[in-house]
Length: 535
View 1 (cartoon, rainbow, N blue to C red):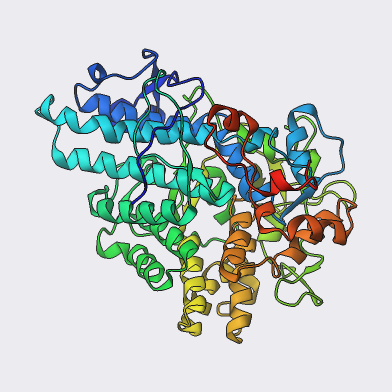
View 2 (view 1 turned 90 degrees about the vertical axis):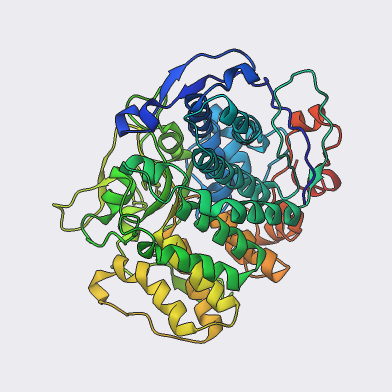
């Protein structure tokens, strides 16, 4: 059991609270803002509406600037999917460029985790204060309370899971901080300690979570039972608990037995699936995605600043993806070079595009509209309103987690191949169904690894996939060639990159120098203390 400690949030607990109109009754009523006092006290917790309001605050804090762009940097920009662009870095994007130049240090703005602990503190506040409302509001039931608690515990677990994979050793608290005068002296907990606690915590409340919400935006945009199952499966996969991971994946795949409405299915139309998933949002395969609606104070500015094309659209000119249709280093055979996509793979046409000369391949996933009237579905139209949801989990996650767990546990390779084929066949309709051929277990391991890269390109998952492989294998041998290629494209020598990234500590983020000053018990990632390689 992890220790209970107190998290101090910089600038204290002074964020605007949210009242959720009509219980998230419709897309247009997703958020309703109102000011509150500087701190939260027991006087606030009078009825079910106050509990609902604070649950809404947890989601709204995820909408705030700094939360999503950090996930994109930690999970995507650091991966082999993205390399330094051709344009000089603008000042606001210089810290991203430093990451892509391997000059990351503790002063980098993306080394700060404050936004995540703000969300966590909201969740802990609900957990600490909501139970007392049962005695004050006769219409507030235990079932409602437990559903709310399951929901915020799901949000909290997601935040901690992202932090563990990004920083490794992190402060961990299950108590709310609501008093500015309390001292901040909190050491880090080990990754296994944190994740094992979170898995058991979610298992204890999984049956309390709402099976489905009445409206689609809530059903896709709030933590439901299937979202909790998906998060548990993801953490089990990270921990190498493969049999249990498969069990939880099967729970999701069999969700129709619990509720026909909650049944998930892949969007199948080759000409429309991209727009339905990434532009319209809340698709039939969505499990949990962060919502951005027209009446919000803010939109999804992170995606529109990190991705898209054109100097007037953020700073995506400062980095780019590889032309994945060209040769790349295969993670299985460090000498053989193979294409990531077949020429007909729809994902190679929708997730990035060639612009200008052959050296520019800007990212357009989430922001590029597929024109279904075109013979080739190249994204040449762009969405001007930053309202797109950010997808944390969708059905292909479940299939590919199950496939990976089957391979690593010595399970049925035919079943693993069938899981991979779900997303692969959809993206390659010209090849027909079951176009993939079963190979050895090592071949299938690489197939799963690469299909995850293809399917989740630019969704903030790739770097965590690389780290999970490093964690499982205990060294960087299989991922180092991929990262070497990324930095060689920046003009760095392979020997230089190898020297910097052979140390396992170098694969994790440094802790912000501001956090180190605030909390004297924090210990910096050893790589950023003991070496002068990254300055």
